[in-house]
Amino acid sequence: MSLEAYQKTQQATEAPSQTEYRIFAEVTRALIDAKDLPKTDKRLHDALYRNRRLWSTLATDCAVEGNKLPDMLRGQIISLSIWVGKYSSQVARGEDSIDVLVSVNRNIMDGLAAQASLASSSVNNDTGDRNGQDFTSATV
Image (cartoon, rainbow, N blue to C red; front, side, top):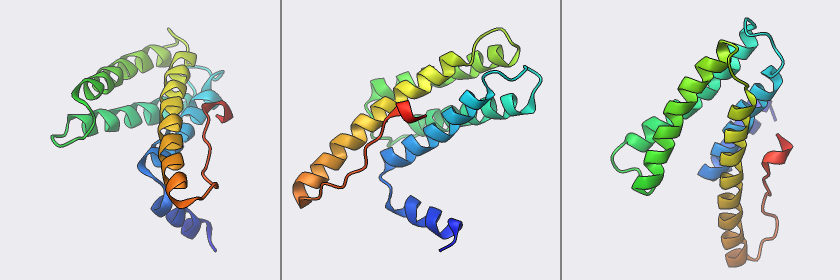
């Protein structure tokens, strides 16, 4: 089986919170890898761009009518997205640390992991299956 076929299968079987977690993990790993790079390094700016794009996508999704998240949470995600954009500019200029962005992402990942764990245990309790996947931001 090719890597592409495996990835398509994985994406088809992931719950939305698992997909979000996976994307946050990939973006956060790029931020961690860019931590000690000089502010002129393209990899730092690529990591910051990917993180901004992730947060911008979340904000756009939260702004769409029909989004099922509670209004307060949607507003918080949009506000956080705006903050991430501004803070990322400060990091790019060498004025602030990338560690704060990593911390924010890890906090979101912890929430997604808890959500996935609850969903998984609900499914597992219904089916008797105990092979649910555990998530933790500590692995990033």
